[in-house]
Image (cartoon, rainbow, N blue to C red; front, side):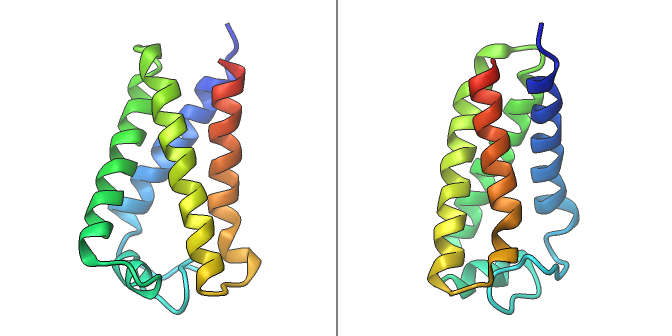
Length: 121
C-alpha cells in the first residue's frame, strides 16, 4: 500500500477545512485582489454571493470525502477530481484580477496534490 496518497489526502482535507473554518475571516498574502477575508475574495473576483456558499460547500465536501477516503477509498478519486477542477477555477480567478503569481501558489500546490492523489492511487 502506498502511503503517499493518504498523506496528501490528509494535507488536502485539513488544509481546505482550515481555510474555510479557521482562516476564512483572516487576511492572508494569498487572498485575491485586496481582500481581507474569504468572502471579499469572491467579491473581488466578480462572483455573486451564492458562489461563495456553493464553492464552500463543494470544497468542504471534498475535504471530508478525502479524509473519509482513508477508510472508504471509492470517495477519493471523485473528491480529488472535483477539488482539482475547483483549483483550476481558482487559478483562473487569480488571472482574471491580475494577481501576482505568489497569490496562486496555494491553488497550484493543491492542484498538484490532487493530481498526485489520483495518479498514485
